[in-house]
Length: 117
Figure (cartoon, rainbow, N blue to C red):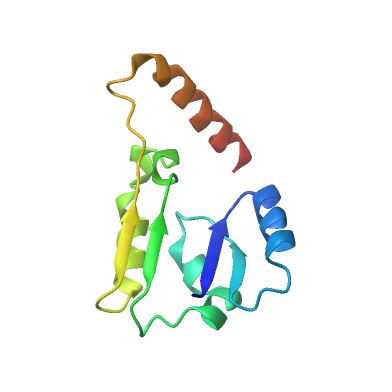
């Protein structure tokens, strides 16, 4: 399988580049999920992923870092619009409504994410 990882954190990107070095079937793109055109237009993405064929898009443990006010559904829709029929979306999203002790931790994680933008 061909895989393109996407992250906007420079440390995560650098680590991924080191781990994936020499793997012709995997690459990493430094881009922000809130800007799908950056992802879809990245040369490394186009070299590995053929959007005319069905693909799997994994948005795992990432959408909860995009605040509701930033409309996280919009970049997801833009990415889905670019995919061929038969493609699959795998999406996870943290939910803390029923775990009151985790709300403070979740808020802290969002604050860290906001600070590295």
